[in-house]
Image 1: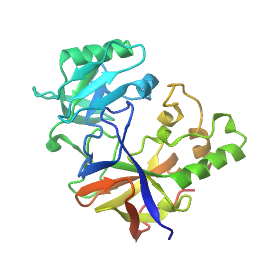
Image 2 (image 1 turned 90 degrees about the vertical axis):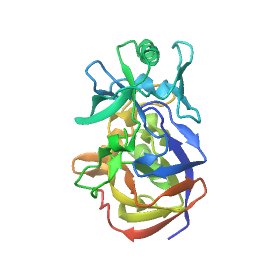
Image 3 (image 1 turned 180 degrees about the horizontal axis):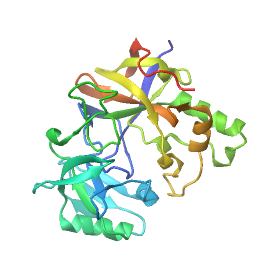
Image 4 (image 1 turned 180 degrees about the vertical axis):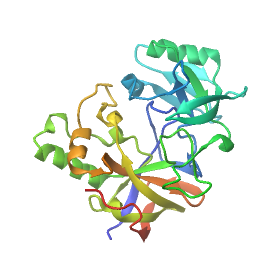
Length: 282
C-alpha cells in the first residue's frame, strides 16, 4: 500500500457554519475537540442546517481558547462574541434524537435571528454525558457523538474526490465541476491512497490515534451547496447517486469512531490495521 498521510484537519465549532482549518486537533471519544459543540435550532427546537438554510455556509465562526465563539457574516450585524453558557439545560431535537443542551445568551440568539431573518436559538453541548449514542447498528456500547449528524468524525480522500470529479466530467455534467472537498465538510482529509481504497478499511491508525471505520457516509443535499456562495446546484449528489450507492443512498467518505486517545496532526501517516469493515459501494 502506498504511503497515505493526513493533509488537512477541519473543525466545525457551530454545526452547519464555516469550518476552521487547523494543523492539529485533540481527538475526544465524541469527536475532535471543539467540533460541532454548538447548534442552531428553530422555534420548535429542531436542528437547523444547510439543508434548510444554505446561507449558514457563509456564517463565519472563530473559536477562542476559552471555547467561546465570535460570529460574523456577510450582510449581518456587527460581530458577536458568544461566551460558553452555564445556565440550565433544555432538550432539543437533532434528527429525531433528544439532546440536552444549554442555551446561549439571548443576545447571541438575537444576533443569529437577525442574520437568518427567522427566529432561532443558539445552543451549546457541554458535558460528555449529554452526547448522543452512535447508531447501535454500527456502534459498540458507549460510543457517543456530539452534534455531528451521526458519527464522531468523517474522513475523506483526495484521490476519491479526483475520481468523483472525473465521473462528473465523463457524464457530461462538468458545468458544476470540479467540486472542492469543502462540499463534504470532513474532519480529516488524506492523500496517497488509491481511489475508493477507503471502502475496504476496517480500522486505521492516524498518528497516535486508532479509529474504527464504521460505514460509508450517506450524503445529502448539503453537498450541493457552494460553500463560498451558498448557491445550491445538483452536483455532486447527482453523480454520486449514479455511481456510488449503498442501501439506496449516495456515498462519499467514511465515518470514524475513535478507539484511543491522542491528537492528529497534518502530516501524520495513516496505517490500515484492519480491513473490510465498511463494505463495498457500487
